[in-house]
Amino acid sequence: MKYYVAPTLICLTLFLQGCNSSDESNAATTKPSDYKGSGSLTYGIAQTTVTNLFSKGGRVAAIGSIKSIDGATTWTVPAVVNYTNDAIPFAPDLFNDYGNQYSSAKAAVAALDSKDIIEVDADGEVITAYIFADNYFEMYINGVAVGKDPVPFTQFNSNIVQFRVNKPFDIAVLAVDWEENLGTGTEDNQGSKAHPGDGGFVAVFKDNNNKVVAITDDNWKAQNYYTAPVSDLSCLSESGTSRLSTNCTIKGTDDASILYGVHWTMPTGWEKKGYDDSQWPSATIFSNDTVGVDNKKSYTNFTEVFDDSANDAQFIWSPNLSLDNKILLRTTVSQ
Ligand SMILES: [Ca+2]
Ligand SMILES: [Ca+2]
Ligand SMILES: [Ca+2]
Ligand SMILES: [Ca+2]
Image 1: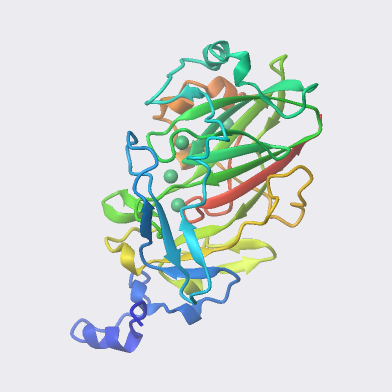
Image 2: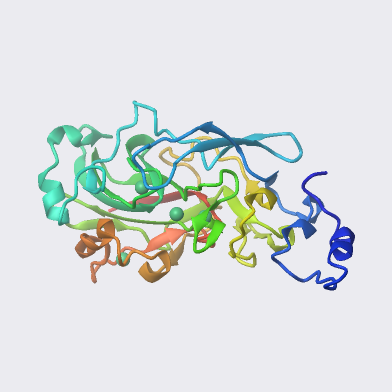
């Protein structure tokens, strides 16, 4: 089996240097049977199916296809997205290196046209959402697609979305941490050809009186559907519905072909109003520093919205900002 090199062989290979079975960078010492979880395992690099969704982007935003080790499932990586689906509108810009670059939230709102308002309920109130995603998002309100991220990977951008809805309403978001080495959750970064990238999602929702009606925080639900890279399958665990990889290394490697991915099927209807997310884990919050937005104008031009001291929106994700790459987020706005 090409994905498994027996530890004894490695010990023989390393005979002159001695055998160190505790070296976690030695990816080949793990084998599929080490995995005890509920996910579907893939190994190595996916086949590219879409060369680049956004050719102007800083990094190549490709889509790939990879068969599970057990042969039962073919997975699309990093995610099945609606980027090329014309039925779902691109979210207008707050700040986009390839589009509009507003200096403030007020300027971005002023530039919006009433035709940009997505109708969920014809007699509803207008809600404005301010969004920064590392790297890609699609947002649904009561199951209605209200906007998708125009820049799938880099450079980092931010968006504004307006929709008309009655309370209570459900917000549902697909958030994707994109990848360069398809199927492995890695990119050329920090001196390694295959370094785990990290994610993060922050949003603020305001009504027509500029009153905050929702912010991202740990009251949201967050479930992870794709963990990678994994070089030691024994580091993975599950607790209730939480798919945990926080014991796994986030070190880079130069060889993406020896990395595993773990995948779970997204539930039908996750974006709909009233979808039962009660068993999902709560979102985990991360600081601005951890996500690393200090030097990004797409964030820093809008801190009066994202870091409002009275309503400080938090970056949310599943527990592992680095290794969890495809996240569904949900909350209900009641008042
Ligand atoms: Ca983006
Ligand atoms: Ca990642
Ligand atoms: Ca990222
Ligand atoms: Ca904040």
